[in-house]
Image (tube, rainbow, N blue to C red):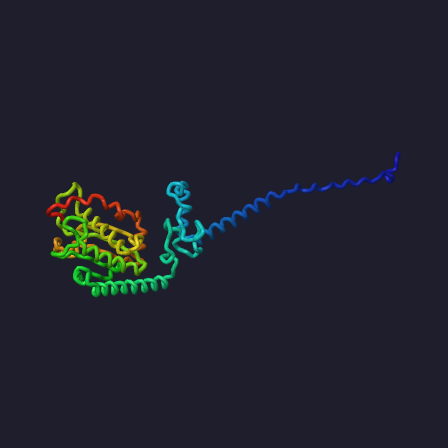
Length: 313
C-alpha cells in the first residue's frame, strides 16, 4: 500500500480565456463620420458665402445641364471677373446675374455712396450738355430759326431733346419718312454734340392721331413713326454720333401725344432723343428680351409705304 504523503500534488490552474479583439472597424466608422461632418459644415459655409446669382446658376445647371450647350457661353451665367466663371469677391450680392459683358462702371458692387456720387456727376454732365446745345442753337444761324421747334428738358430718364413740327415747317414730307433738308442739318449738329458724353441714347418717333390712309396694306402710324425715328438715327450718325451709342429706336405712333388736349396738333409729330442716364440704361439692358420693341438699325427701313392724301403726318 503506497503512502499518500509521497503522492505528488498536481495543481490545475484554469487560464482565463482572453476576450476576442474588437478590431479597428469602429475607428474607420468614426473617421468617416468626422469627414462627413467636415464636408457638411464646409458646404454650409460655401452656400452661406455664395451670391444669389451663383446659387441660381447652380440650381439651373442641375435642372438643365444642357443649358450652356443650348445657349452658348462659358458658364451658366457670365460674370464680370477676368477669370471665366469667377466673381470679384465673396461679398458680392448679385453674382452672375446677366449674360454678356457688363460695364465695370455700372457694376452693382459699387457702394451706395459711390453710386450716388456717380449720379451727381452724371446729372452735372447732362446739365452741361443741355447748356451746350442751347448755346449751339443760339449761336448757329441754321438752328436759331428753329429755336421754337427744339425743346430741351431734364427728365427721370435723362436729357430729352424733342424736335417738333410746326404748321408751316414740318420735319418730314407728309405721310413719309423723308427728312427735310433743314431737319438733316439740325440732327447732324445735335449728333456731333451728343458725342461729348459717354451716355447712350434712345430715339422715339411720334405722329399725330390722324390715321394713315393709303399706301400698302397694314402700313400705319406705327410703321411711319418707326421709319422716321430710324431715319433720324441715320442723320445723327452722319453728323458724327458713334453708331454704338444708339441703344434703342422705337416708333410710338400717337400713343404719347405732346398736346393731350389736341391729338391733331402738329406739335405731336416729333422726334424725341433721350440721352439716357445710368439708371434708365441699366433698366433697358436688364429687361427680359431687351431686343423686343427695339427697332433694328436697318430692319425698319423696308416698306416706307406710298404717301397718300390724308395720311397721319
